[in-house]
Image (cartoon, protein in one colour):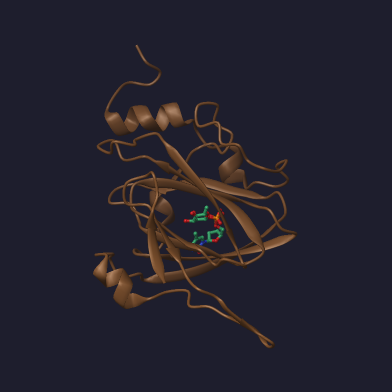
Length: 186
Ligand SMILES: Cc1cn([C@H]2C[C@H](O)[C@@H](COP(=O)(O)OP(=O)(O)O[C@H]3O[C@@H](C)C(=O)[C@@H](O)[C@H]3O)O2)c(=O)[nH]c1=O
């Protein structure tokens, strides 16, 4: 498995080598030794969600120390997006997107302090992700998936989003809070 950097500091892509034969395929999906070598905190929770085509989940973050995530698509395909919400980062406010699917089996490492979301591109898509702190809904942060400033180019028409995501605040609002400025400005 090799590791590729992305334009966002600390956001990494793990690229495995799937082996195909008459039975189907085999792929490695995680390598603890490699994660340790990169200095990643150990993961403590492994989760899976299933989404129908067009569904968007996001954009989700976490207050305080935040949480690191390792995201992959075990079935189907998703358009996956991260936004840098670390005020001290040179790429603060920028986004990176990548298709995760069940052919290349890329895993995206998302460090603490980012917003994360995805749209299901296949009829159904199973997303599996590890996090390095147990889930705590009291620390949920949500920003609109259709925020005008973020302007994420979701590939498909949006079918279903959760109540939480539909009623989320704007990136401008969260950004003001992160950098300690009043919102609305002035
Ligand atoms: C995320 C999570 C949810 N839940 C519960 C809460 C709720 O009843 C149900 C669905 O939760 P949500 O609507 O928050 O699920 P979802 O919208 O899929 O949330 C996920 O979105 C993607 C984009 C991420 O990056 C994840 O970190 C996570 O925020 O599952 C847990 O019990 N443990 C968990 O770790």
